[in-house]
Image (cartoon, rainbow, N blue to C red):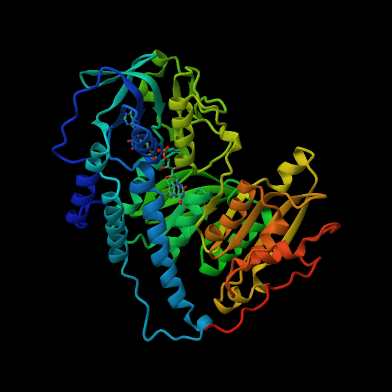
Length: 508
Ligand SMILES: Cc1cc2nc3c(=O)[nH]c(=O)nc-3n(C[C@H](O)[C@H](O)[C@H](O)COP(=O)(O)OP(=O)(O)OC[C@H]3O[C@@H](n4cnc5c(N)ncnc54)[C@H](O)[C@@H]3O)c2cc1C
């Protein structure tokens, strides 16, 4: 029997609640007219409120639940914390790879791991508290917001009039119409971090970033995990070679992988949940104690009365925005997960700052001009920025790729973290960087070099001339750069030998 949300440390939860939605909060009296009204207090809304207040705009922020949204409460923060703990257990099990031996048996304390997740979340919550926002001259309302017209929002009995508004209401987990699933009961990212007991057998439905991250984390915390993915590979938007490395890592961890598999039904028998899926014409059944469903997010648009605001939306894809993040009502913007976007991009803070510039300063900043890196925090991590080769081909952009396998990187060898590669794409005939994919233990950190280079217009040659401490795993980026020389005709895995950056002299 899996318990959730009943027996964990209430003090930690009280701290979080007090920071993100204080019990005795009293909504302020509304101003006559706001420069900016923001609906939704997730990362997109809070960043915009902060930014607008710093520019001395009269700003109101409306949140119906807790500040911090998905990211803090049910997304980035709890998932990254559980990943860290699970990594530690994996390292203990693989101690011999590091020339070490763990004395005795490794027993996972799942309840302690989850309590740690919640205490980290509470600690970070204190940094974005309701009181701090109010102290920074943001009028903070806790209520459900509903547009009353093209320039006003109803909040309880009050009407907030605005010059500009931002919709940042985010999204919630999509519930797939799988027969029997609702009756059997399932976890989502909204409930999984409340667990206090480990599900000994867990089936994860969905092989996108969240499904992959949590499948690996739970496996490393001792659950027997099966992951079922509709597509033929994990992380469908990434390159095939990157996804393949992830599949191999999952196999080593002991995760049962079902790709190209469609879940068709769920039953409960003898206390077990039986998940039926079809793979290559065969029906396969897996038994589990819990099912985690992570098949995407549905935008929170229904409650907003968007018709009154003249804002067009699609109930599944989200609010329609142009390149300036304006909706069909040019005085109303949208940012974050509520927007209809061509693909998942985690860039709420950057898009919120863009909205504040465009809305309050009449700027014309384009969202398409942002360089947005992203990362899936599995082990190894998979990070990407810029263009993929397949996209370049579609656009007839000639590209040349420089690849460095991590097993050629001294620091990766020292760290026993040799899985993966760095792949940098430049425009053929130049050293202009168009994109990069990094698969490595610390890919999320390593991609920053390339993002900075793209953003500042630094070419691959310049990137190669940066002096770095030796040895680092980020040297792989430099090795890719070193492989570049003007007139290089081609380069790919194994086609051109890359040089390790020169070893540093002895430390003083
Ligand atoms: C498990 C998981 C892990 C993730 N990990 C990462 C990661 O590592 N890195 C990363 O960049 N992204 C990650 N993400 C994605 C990230 O959490 C979201 O992209 C981000 O939270 C979106 O921010 P947002 O402000 O647009 O919306 P949300 O965070 O969803 O916030 C929207 C807010 O609006 C409020 N709201 C909704 N409707 C109304 C209304 N009518 N009136 C008032 N308030 C309303 C909601 O209560 C909510 O607080 C992860 C997501 C998940 C699920």
